[in-house]
Length: 143
Ligand code: SF4
Ligand code: SF4
Image (tube, rainbow, N blue to C red; front, side):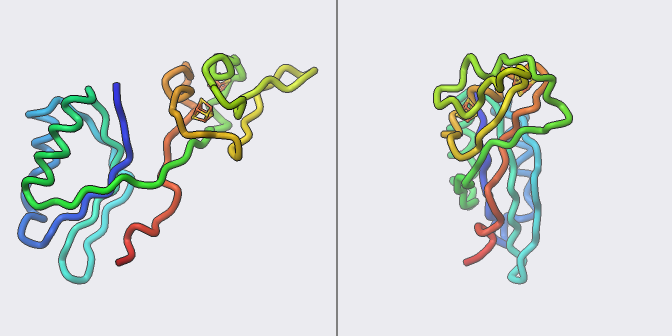
């Protein structure tokens, strides 16, 4: 499973077309909408996390671009949902930068975001889905 946070900018002439629904039907992709706005010039901006097989992902993005949508990768970071973390330690086994580590002697799991390379391995490894990919900021609405 491949996933990325994307910023989609829909020109006024395509803003009402169901292009994102087409990604689900034709490319077997799923998505989670993180933000949606209509800009003053009636352009639409959608920030979403898109999931699927890598090949389908690339083809789906090409489909959007062929239909006039501007697609950009969002800056992204990993956050931990502290309420969901059960301190099982599964993420520490996959984390290549030691951003996730075992605190001694209490044996709880610490997360040092400064060391995180956003490789996303912990997102897949975490049994409770406590590790989440998030856009870093909203700057991409500027221009
Ligand atoms: S794998 Fe998930 S639940 Fe387990 S310690 Fe890591 S973040 Fe917490
Ligand atoms: S995204 Fe990668 S580097 Fe960051 S905490 Fe998870 S496993 Fe470690």
